[in-house]
Structures are given as structure tokens and as C-alpha cells.
Image 1 (cartoon, rainbow, N blue to C red):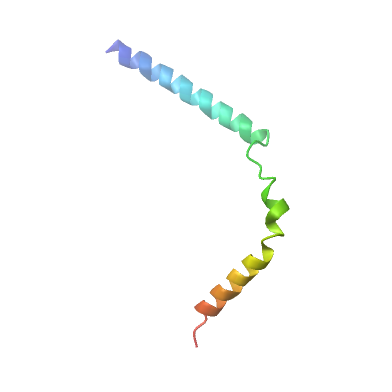
Image 2 (cartoon, rainbow, N blue to C red; image 1 turned 180 degrees about the vertical axis):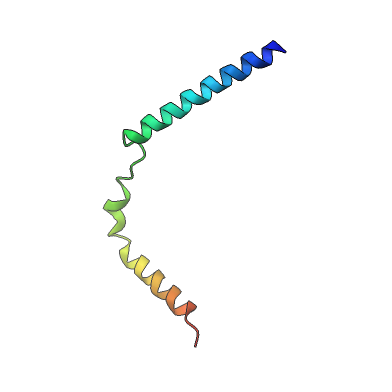
Length: 61
């Protein structure tokens, strides 16, 4: 039974370690998207067409 307590304590320590690593990665900008804004202008016309098509399809007289 004491093995369960040891494994539980180790798993909590590992989980806290991963959580701290995640928080540090977020704060350092690891997950910032720097690629999408540079290519957004290439696909802007397609997005405008999709929005206009959706608005035409949703409008009912």
C-alpha cells in the first residue's frame, strides 16, 4: 500500500514539473504565431469571398 503513496507523490511532482515547463514556455513566447500574419495577406481575398458567400447563403427573404 505504501508503494501507491510513493507513486502518487512522484506523479504529482512530475505533473507539477510539466506544468511549470508549460508556463515558462508560454511566458517566453514559445507558442506565439509569427508565421500566420505574414501570409494572411496572401489569402485575404479567399476569406472575403467565403464571408460574402456565407452572408448570401444565410440571408433569406
